[in-house]
Image 1 (cartoon, helix red, strand yellow):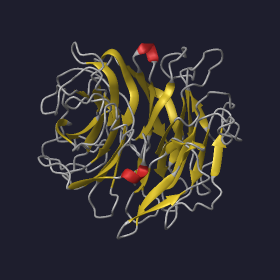
Image 2 (image 1 turned 90 degrees about the horizontal axis):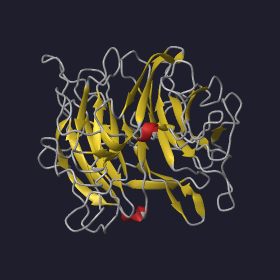
Image 3 (image 1 turned 30 degrees about the horizontal axis):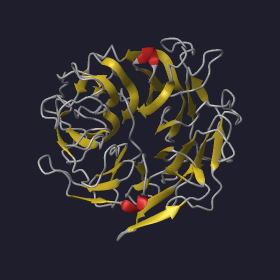
Image 4 (image 1 turned 180 degrees about the horizontal axis):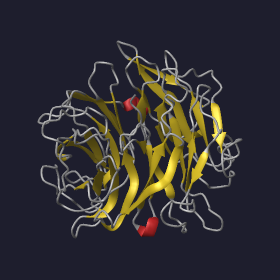
Length: 468
């Protein structure tokens, strides 16, 4: 199943530390396995990382999976000064501001799409760009810039959002990229020399920053969701775009709100379900939602989610969910899907990076909600913070634990691990990794890696984005 991949985390350095797969092994073909060794890897953006003396040029840190998970010793750090990567590290490019993984050239190795939200192009400052970094037996290296719209004005923020998926069911993975004033579709397969097969602008979407994708109709073609805020709907306008076999059909969900999302099968019926994060507090201009934030689940079907259905709503005042809804928690500001306990149902990680823990403001937390035959519920939900026994570190004001979340099986035990970004940890960011087991996440053997542990300099903004 394809699902939203996008988000943030970064590092710095001009060199690459590569990790090789056995020479005789065929690449695994797994999404997110950049070196083809059969273990999924995690890419973390650090869009504020300094590269040499260049401030906030941005970087991406790739941590390679193994039987023991990930470590700082097995990594690749990629910048625009890395060999074969197009462009050059420039101040405030923000390389690593968005990320998405998929095998774009069909060689069995997963590739990585990296957004540089404020890349300058010629005399146009802050336009933004996107680059594909190619996977291979030694990991990620080299790259190809994606064709950029010539109509973008300064500070257009192109590549604010990136998603991958086979959007037209032809067997080739495609890429879609959003910016402040433009949305673009790049059709696969991709060639390392020439790039995408074709690309077109999608002007009907107007202004949007985010996108996520996944198969909600069970036909093998991924639907795309571009949430954005509009006058009169400050909770976010939600629609999805489904391939009918001859064209894309757009379906609105007028009762849906949210700015973040992920797609996964939480009830095991074979259709991906749309999980939306509506993290804003209710107010006069936005009467819907719940204090502290909420998520909603729109269940998929043969033509995607039915707009007439009553969605499942879960917040911190839902039975079984730890904690309580408080103003400004931002519950639902980060979402990811994966099977934490290996029971065949997708589970959902929900970040609430502004959650106060005791008297510590904005320390942050992550809640795991479990899928089941009856769908997503609060039953058995677990919450984690840096105050949880066994979780490395401690709660500090503005750590923002849960700013990004990613569920991914890094040690190939059949259970998804949690990678949680604390984007403001010590002023430069960090990630914490908790392992998945048959009984859910365990803090035993948990790992903590800060921006400095992976050689990043500057404010870094490490873990402001992650890609699976």
